[in-house]
Every structure is written in C-alpha cells, then in structure tokens.
Length: 321
Image (cartoon, rainbow, N blue to C red):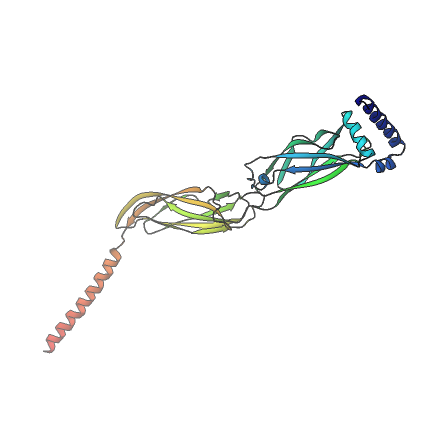
C-alpha cells in the first residue's frame, strides 16, 4: 500500500471517528482509549538552595512533559491521524496557591504541544519571598496544568496539580532605637548610661553580640554582652552601655566618642552571621575632681588622733613618774 493510500485511509478513519464521537461522545472515547498525560518537572538541586528573603528573585526552569497514551488499535490510529494532520493541544498552566509570604509568576500560562506520543515545553517561574518567611521553613508553590476535556478532539483531556517545595534562608536584619540621646555631659564623679533598644526585622530567633570600640585612655566602658530576640518580627530587647570618665584630681574638660558594634547571629546556628550595625556615643566630661583629697584628709585625721593619744599617754606617764 502506498503512503498516499495509507494517509487517505487514516484520514477517512479519523473523520469517521470524529462523526461517531459527536453522536456518541462518551462511548467513543471509552473505546478509543487515548488520553493525555501531563507531568511537570524542575531542577530539584536548584530548589534545594535556600532563597534569600527580600533581596532575591529566584528563576526556575519548568519542564512540561506531554504524552498521549493509547491502545495498539483504534487509539493508535487516531493518534497517527492527529499527528499527520499537525494537530496540537493547548495546555493551560497556572499558579493556584503559594505560601503566604511568597509571590510567584510564570512567564507563560499557555503552551501548544503536538498531539503525539511525546512532546515537551519549557517555561520559567519567577519567585520572591518577603522578610516574614521563616528561616529554613517549608515553602510551596502549587501549579495546575490543564488540558481541558474536549479540547483535543476525541482524546481524553487531563487536569492535574503539582507542588514545588523550597526553603527561605536566614535574614539577619536588626534595627536600633536609642530611647535617649546619644550625647551626655557628666561630671568626673558620674557615669553615663545609654539604653540601646534592638528590634528583630529578620525571620529567625537572633542573638545580638555587642563589642565596644574606640575607648580612649583613662576612660572606662562596659556593655551587656548579648541579648536574644524572639523569632517574631518586631520582637525587642534592651542592652545598656555604661561609660565612666577620668576622675583624676583637677579640672576636666574632655570628651570621648565610643562606638558600639552590634552583630546579629542566628540563635540556633552561630555560623549564620549577619552584617553588623554601629552606633556612636559621645560623653563630655566637665568639672573639677577632688578624687583622693577626701582619703588624704581622712588619713590625716586618723594620724592626728593617734598622735594626740600617744602624746597624752606619754605626758601622763611622765607626770606619774
């Protein structure tokens, strides 16, 4: 049989089946046993890389795999007829649900694939997550692929859902608030105390490490070693910086600029370290200091009393003799 005759027979067979399918759609589809099967695939290695909240737009290649599964008889002939005619199936792809802190879009929501034993198409998915995404929590994107029933002639259509999973990374962001001004004027006998309020703007339980820099000679400074911020965004804690000025004897007219370094660290994983914040505090030391005179005066009084007691004791002893 020539190729021309073979194609003619297939074409007439296809037309006959189409006419029958319009008259008896349900029974015809059941007998033909030809149906669409769709699968969606993506790079698992890529989805296992944590997504950076707020600062990253993640791009993923989505592969749509299309098959028409038939029996070896009428269904096979129908598929050959469709393929020879260049028939295509329209596939609708949509994102139907995501994690509440995730936004995702597809660059295409409809693709055309040949009615054949196998065909595939690639589309791109773009996703971004905000700072409320829990560090290393479970995120998901649910995708629906649909080849509607009746849209591919007498071939049975397909509707399916696919779920892509990913994880957000740790976002070590903190904010500082100074309830009081960061400049104070004190006398040499006083000390300056500065409260420093820290707020968690990230997505995990965070420890803040404090370090003091630029302490001039003769000055003293100390600060709370660490504070812990709860996981919830907006959780706060207060650390205290204490600065002691020089108080040597004499008049003082000096000042110090002391910088505090605040480093966020993931509480459950100290290897996850964020960029530090810095705050500078200025203390002016003004006034006279009599430091040491009081002690000298007290010692002098004690010595004088001792001398008087000794003197009286010696005089009384001599008078008795």
